[in-house]
Length: 429
Ligand SMILES: Nc1ncnc2[nH]cnc12
Image 1 (cartoon, helix red, strand yellow):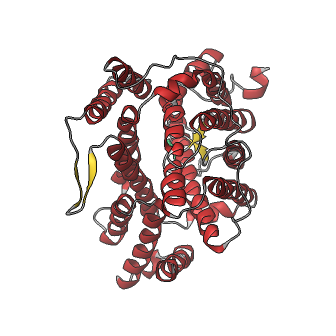
Image 2 (cartoon, protein in one colour):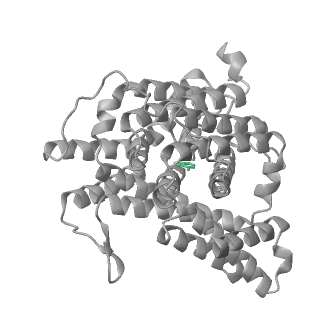
Image 3 (cartoon, helix red, strand yellow):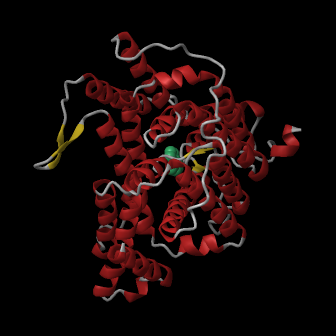
């Protein structure tokens, strides 16, 4: 049956190879089980319920991707997208988390429709590569800042805006240690580096009496506080539509970039550089977002960490199915998830920042008209504490710079229209 469903022989793989690949991918992305509930709890959501929603949304995404699209690509609620949900939509714009979940739901439905009618490809292709790279890197810097702030390493300063916190305080020391541990372990090829670092720092927290030990395993907590709590009543307001648009937009870039990167690593692209069964992969992605919003989590997306499993030999959807099953089993480790302190995951955020910034090497730094908008996005995204603002400023900068430099041919209609819309939003609010 496995052979019929996943065509293991045709993909020159075996059950054992796929299970090892699935375990590898899971270990590299399992940090989301700890980070996501912590991040969404900042938006006022129930930690236990989000923990369950995170595991279930990831499992649903992985199982659909594996069984329907037959790709070794795993999904989970995305970093960056969860920060946008908590700090921009709820924190800055003041919407309730229920309304924000409604916006996630609607963005998932729009993504599904766009994928089915193939407009998605046109939108993504009309965005210049430099802006796509800049957006990924900017999200990375944004995550790094969140990590530094949560560990007390970067603190507010009325004179200079920000400055260094108390580096001898326990959380700061632990965060730095966790980060160094990850880098050293990754350097030595340890696939489980991130999760080992999170657990090691949590154990130190318990040993030093900073974290209370609550046990490791238990029946899953109730999902009732977030299940079907999304509120769709205000998502049709004009200001909310821009949130839906931003969520859709960020997910669009995120997913496209991730799918291409993973497919590239696995050799799944055809001779024209296209991904076969792309629509099935996108359908899995958007369906998982819709299911995640109903369960109680921010946007679910394809994970770049899937490249770890592909490097370990994962070639078919069976890898993703193994990851999905492991996320289901994770439902039983909620006491451990509840114990992990913020400083144990701060190093992880910084590490993800490094992964997301690596694309900057492909920017044409000799062409100022390409490099300048990239830097605008990268700097403004963390400093305005908003992914959406960073993206919008990048588009405006790109269009203005290309126009003033006389490089009209580089300016596609899509970018020009978006730049005008973003500019209007800055002016009229
Ligand atoms: N938003 C995201 N996109 C791709 N891979 C990720 N890994 C963690 N967050 C991710």
